Each structure stands twice: as C-alpha cells, then as structure tokens.
Length: 333
Length: 273
Image (cartoon, rainbow over all chains, first blue to last red; front, side, top):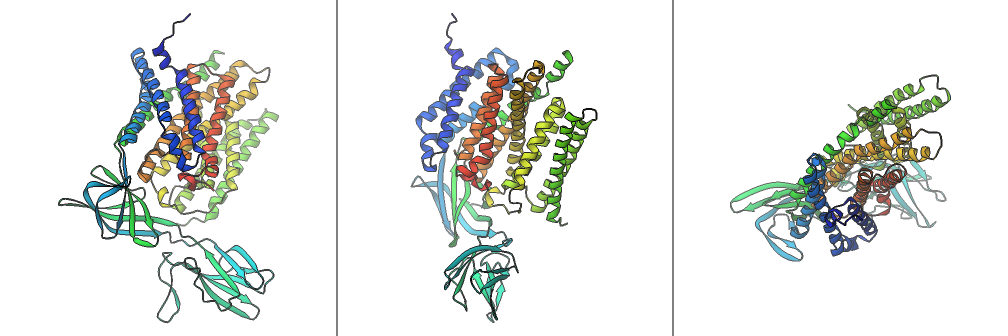
C-alpha cells in the first residue's frame, strides 16, 4: 500500500479542484442573494477560510514545483501570481480605509467620514467648482403621454418630429412641431432656446381639432407647468437627458502647497496616499459634490499579481497552441 | 466626413450574406466533392470578415467611441471575434481548416442573427463607461469568449463523432486536441479580460473587486476553465469528460455575458437591453 504523504496531498491538484469547485459553487449561490446580504457570504469567516485553504494548497504546489523542476517556471509564476493576488486582497481587506467627503462649493474640509466617524486626512480639500454636463443630442423620437378628460382616454406613444397622430375616439390629432433643449422666454415673452444644453427640455405640441389648432409647450422637467387653452387634453413629455460628465474641481491644501485638480468619473485624483473618486451629486443643488476617499495598500500588490499572471499564462500557453502535434500525428499516420 | 448610417447597415448585411454564402459552399462540398467548394468558402468567409471589420470601424468613427456599448454592438463584435480568432488560431496552430471553419461559420451566423434583433441606434456613453480601459477590457474578453465558444463547438463535434462507428480514433482525438489548444488560446485572453476589468473598476469605483453578480459570474467562468485545464493536463481527462466540461464552461460564459444582465441586478446592468 502506498504511504499517505500529507505534503503531497495538501499541494495536490485534486485538493485544488475540490476547493475551487466549492468556491465556485458558493460564489454562484451568493450571487442570487439580495445585494445587501452578499457581503455576509463573501466576507464571512468560512468563505475566507476556504480562500485561505486554497492559498495553502497553492503555496505548497508552487514550492514543490520550483524545487522539483526548474523548467516549470511559467507554471510556478502563474500560480505564485494567484497567491500574490490573494495576499493583496488580504491586505486590502484588513487595511483599506474607505470614507466619504461631502463638500459645498467654496467649502473646505480636513477630514472624511469613515464608518460614521471623522477621520483626519492631514491636509485640506476645498471644492472650487462642481459641474454637470449632458449630451446635447435631443431624443431621436419623443415619448409622450396624453389624457383626454371627458372621454377617460389615456395613452402613451412615441412620435417623430412633424408626424401626425390621431387619437382614436376623440376629435384630437397631435403633432410635435418643435424641440428646444433649453426653453426660455425673451423680453417680448416669445419662446427662445437659450443653449444647446438640455437644462429645460420642451416640445411644442400642436393640438388639432376641426377648425382650430393650438400650439402648446410641454416641459420634461416641469410637467405641472402648462399654458393649455383646451384643458380637456393634457400631455406629459418623458425625456431624461443622458449625463455626459460630472466633475469636481478641487484644491488640496497641504501647508503652503496648493494643488489644483479635476476629479471625474474614471479620473480619480491621488493625493498623499488617498485616492479621491467622484461618486455622487445632488440634482437639486449643483453646488454640492460627494467624493469617495480610499486608501488601499493592497492595490499595488494585487496589480503586481495581475502582471505576473498574464506573463505566466502567455509563457505557459503560447507554446501549447503552436505545438504542431496535429501535423506530426498526421505525418506519422 | 460624414458617413451615412445606412452604410453600416449595408456592410453588416453584406457580411451576413457572405457568411451565409460560406455556409452554402460548405454544404455543397459534401454533395459535389469534385469542385473546390471549401477553398471558395474560405475566400468568401474572409471577404465577409473584411466587410464586418469595415462596419465596426465606421461605427467606431461615427460614434466617436468604441462601438461595444449595447447588446447589438456587443453581438456584432462577438460574431467578428469568432471569425478573427479562427483566422489567427488557424495560422498559429496550423490545424486542418475545414474542421474549424464549419463550427466558426455556424457561430458567426447565429450571433449576427441575434444581433439583428437588437436596437441599432448609436447611444452616447454614460460617464462610468468613458474610459480607455473599455476597449481593452471588451476586446480581450471577446477574443477569449470567441476561442472558448469554438472550443465548445469542437467538444460537441467530439461527442457527436465519438458515438458513431467507422470514424478513425486518430481523427476523433485530433478534435479533442484542437479543443484543448483553443482553450490554451482563449484562457489567457479570458484572464486578461477579467483583470483589465478589475483595474478599470478600481479607476472608476475605487474598488478592484466588489462581488458584483457580473464579477462573481466571470470568476466562476474562469474557475471552470481552470478546472478544465488542470484535469486535462494532470488527470488525463480527455474526450467525453473534457467535452462536457467545455459545455459547462460555455454555459457559464453565456450566462456571464448575457444572462446576468437580465436576471441579476448590479453595477454592470447598463450592459443589458
């Protein structure tokens, strides 16, 4: 009978496959839980224990491989990379500071809110300006809802510009005659478009009844606002402009030193080990910004693991794709 | 220069027609073996690929951003990736072309047909998607997905042929071998896709891993292929068992790519619809 070798068993592919299958299964089941319950699984002691057991298995596997066969460098590099990534994750898990910094325009702060407490940053951050920009392109077609009071008829439809629509069972026909992204009135009370920015998107609906046509402006952001002549028919214009960018211009004040920078989504700013992310804004108060502030010492370790695994996999698999085994086999046949 | 949107449509339909014509050539081959239908089919496939590439290029130019943002664009790109992987893999691996060309052709046609059902309007990108990482993340993932999908087709072919009598064992094991090498080709891309996504998430949301359902599913898919590679390499899992693992991997891939968007909510939900 073969003697049981604990070292060999603990670093074996068999154990690795079992552990990975369990991790995959648990991850899969966890994904179906409501979002707020997911951390209960992914950060629970037993899930971390599974990852720890897998790390030990992988470590033993790497060690025995390096010492046994030097030519398997690529394989060892790949597996060591997974260990480095897990190590980085452990550092992130135990050492990350993740806080929130909310500022009004012109206001400065020397701390962030971290788990409900004030956490001093060691420098000051001042919000110079917050800006929000939309895409200027209007809707390709106009989504409107209508209500005809006396007939108790409601409906929703999408119309293109200058396209006629007859509301069945009523005397009304409607047409959208004009679109303005930024509706305003000039000194003579005539509607004018103030800018290409969709600050106040509006459509001019022509309400046609036999012998009379009424032009009526309908506003996406102010549905309650109406200059209707015929109160019997009412409209809503459904249009949510797509946000192009939101950005905070801030100054970091560190003693005498002042650093200006712009923080946008996908463009965080780094200052003295803290990374500042644009995370939120207030649609009703555009002088306000919400930043997420993160200090995660695990990130460089994890990214180093990413580089290692990519290098390792290329070294490991490129020769396997190109091996002309099929050719050779054919030749032999 | 303004390119009329109709050009994209014409190019895409022409590419689709070319892929259908390729399929016709392969069918004719089995009925009229006298003529070189295969060679003709491979030329038409390349022509279709050229048109397909032009369509993606023009859309990229017209949208002013990588055209990988909604389901229509994703499926057009996926169908393109499948043909692209076929051409590159054939060149590196030097495998008999016919064995691969037919499954590739079928996949390209299916995914492009599904793409035609989607909404073709060019929509602007929300802030979270505006990043140079997007093209790297999507391209690496799609090349990986494409190779693994072809590997799945080879696995299916293996299962179909191994059940029949009179087919030489060397031929059947060649299919198994090609499937493995396709995974060897696709797996590094799959890994790069996941890791560039992680780097991007760190730049956009301040966390490189958040157990978002899409992230979790991508990890599971990756693990299925890790298991396949180890069982194939160390435990001698060949043939049927390996083919079934490839099917499991393909299911996981499909679920990650499309299923999650509709079933499980999360950060990636903008990719759906």
